[in-house]
View 1 (cartoon, rainbow, N blue to C red):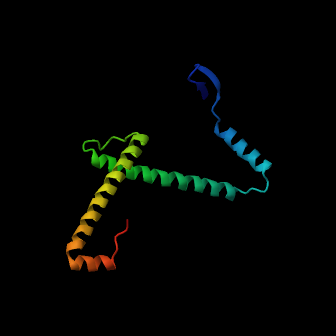
View 2: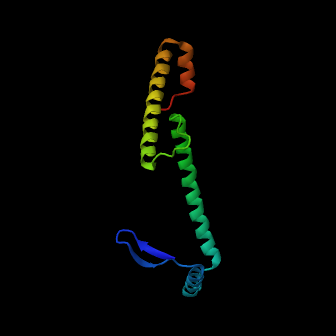
View 3: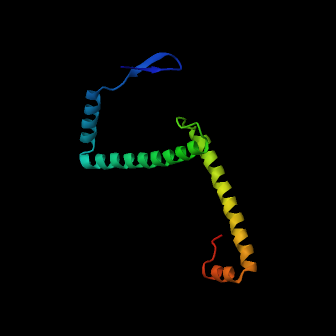
Length: 125
C-alpha cells in the first residue's frame, strides 16, 4: 500500500506490511538484548491505560455537553470548544456556590441555631 504526500500528490513510500513490522521488532530485540518482551508489554499497557483515562474523561465531557444541548445526542463537540464550555460551567457553578455560601452566612447572623451549626461545620472557601 502506497503512502502519499497529500500536499504534493507524490508517493513518498510504502506502508509497512506485517512482515516489515515483525522484522523491525526482531531487530529491536537484537539491538536491545537486555530488554524483554515483558518490558514492551508493560509500555503497551501504560499507553493503553493513558489512552483509556483520556477517553473516559472525554466521554464524560461529551455526555455533559450533550445533556446541556438537547437534540444533539449524536453530536460530538470539537474538543477545544468542549473544554472552553466545561470551564465556563465550572465558573458558573463556582459563582452559584459562592452565592449560596453567602446566603448561609447571612442566615447564620440572624439564627442562633445556624450560628451554632456553622461553628461545628465551617464552610470551606
